[in-house]
Length: 258
Length: 244
Image 1 (tube, each protein chain N blue to C red):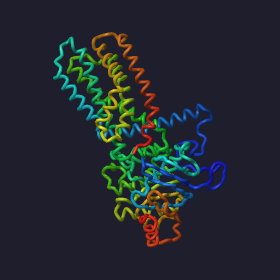
Image 2 (cartoon, each protein chain N blue to C red):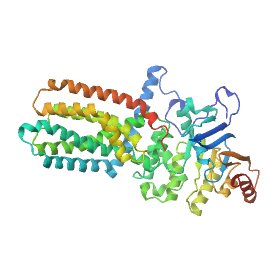
Image 3 (cartoon, rainbow over the protein chains, first blue to last red):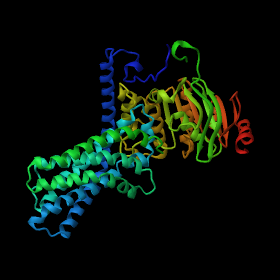
Image 4 (cartoon, one colour):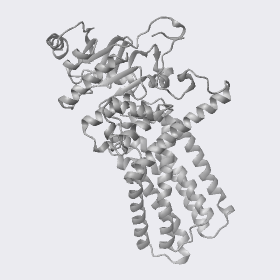
């Protein structure tokens, strides 16, 4: 057999003509997983480095989120007994709207310079692009939440830094980013992309929004963690379903990119 | 080059009856083509003749509406990952990230192509395109010509068997165009298969072994260079391409 593969010392046993991993399914799986994780790591490194230099997504999310909370703070003059009724909704509206702004920018570097085609020309699993973008979006949204949540707590005089509330925010953020990353990839190639993303995304997120707001409200009200279990279950199911579905469909979303 | 089992030589690129429709428009019609390992093919044709579509199909970025495409005897359907490893592409977009430096862009693509020793390879390709001194500059600070050179470095980073160049000299000044010619001449010694689309007939006649002239999505002419001069190629081009 004389099969000429790219000779540039490619880090793959078959390509180098060397036996590195022992034979067998487990070895192939471990090697494949390592390679996949390296691809995700490279993509994530690239997105985080670019964001660190430009701060495009973080600054826009942060400014929009703080402005939203400020407007709500003046719009609602809340008494102590009505805080639990309104405050969770305010928090999640600020997170979702600010996050949507950040998601809308998550593929802008790929679109503006045609770099998505550059990624599609690489011998990588398409889903690794999704996983890296998802992780980057979660990092950016959580970074914004680290500022927004304390600001919300001080504006509305709510003790928000409880483990239960943090867990609900993290679960909500994962589901939000899971769906948002796929829809951002779809919307970025449309003419009205700034409008298209929230139009596509928010209806799909309704179960997540309801569960997050309800669970956060119960926890702010001082209810025990067990009282929120039904809503937290819904959040977990939403996260799992949309993580799996998004992972599977992403390849088709970017198939005819450009 | 042979395929599994040493059946015999296979073309580096083979197209049979390839067509591509975009809605009601036929971008390509019935293209048959064979390019042999180490050959350099220049594809000429007026704007809208299907040159870029042809290269996108060869790169696996666009699926043909009809016909079959094979690279080194393999089709994209079951060998996409393996084939992408063998192909380098320089397109209209440089596929570079503006907020990363030249070196960081190449390191990133090196990781994406799974290169074992990335830094020596990055140093090597930066040297080849004459960009060592600008390696730490962000891409957004580079001129169009510099970005194009970096795009070439990106395309050859993984030492592909097949290099696809889509109008690599468009928008470049005379000096930069000459550098593209030098690069193509340098490639001659490396036995890499090159498919080049260009409006620059001189680039094709001086550096390529074969020509293809596309007109309205059809292969209006295919032939070997056989020592033609620019005037002869111009005559061919006007007869088959521009006049179609």
